[in-house]
Image (cartoon, rainbow, N blue to C red; front, side):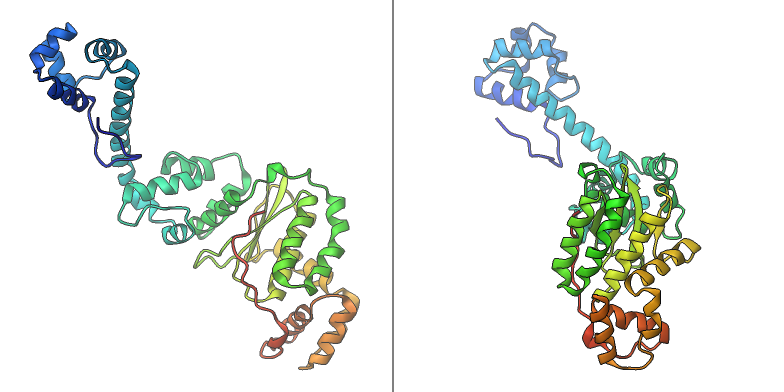
Length: 356
């Protein structure tokens, strides 16, 4: 007998399998009706897929054909499921215009959506599965009207479709519910070690930072940037844990570390029901910037930041502070506005998609 593909683009009525048996036996519909003790009309509808196969009919077919009733029931279940999928696909296609508002190319690139662009129903289905919802209407109910405050904030953003996609990608990459309970004191105690990691290889250092933060109950995940979004980092709380999310918009290690400590500042300084985006320009972001700057280069050392292009001064101060020279350079450049020097001290970083 024929078999079903995982998700066929056609449907095979149970009647087709019954007809195969009839051909093998050399009987017609009238004879089958007599053997099943049902009307010829019922057999005709059954063969054309117009009448569903009941459990009683499956048992009659078992007695008549010798094929177990469970096999006939499996065929019928597959047929009805295929019909339901066809109907569902038709509904999904009607939602495609709304789905196009999201960065579908980004989602395909990172394998969150596997359907080709030509498959509208598959594309919408992949998007819904990515967000864990059943329809585009459910997106509004979950993100715009749901109980999670940071999601409502995301929908109110000037670019909600890119932002919610980027935020959801982080949710898909980590499970903070499995982390130790968040401990503020442990986080504060871990800060000096986190700071000392800046002198090490950035890739290995950020992996170590993830482990240190995890022990404090803080999730750190790196998610590739969504083109056009322009967000370097974000912080919010999930399941009682701070989730720090970094993009790969930064190209050098000093930007990576400044962004990380900026986001840690939100964890320590600000309320746990907010969504903090480091490309916003409000007072909370300014507070986080100030915290990161003073933590990396304490206030007592600010006057010693080079005011001119002097790499030796940068290296000497960095060694005294126990941080990467690129960070001292970045702070000096920020204060003078002169960014056209010292690039040899900055290390390129190409970390993407690290799970927490």
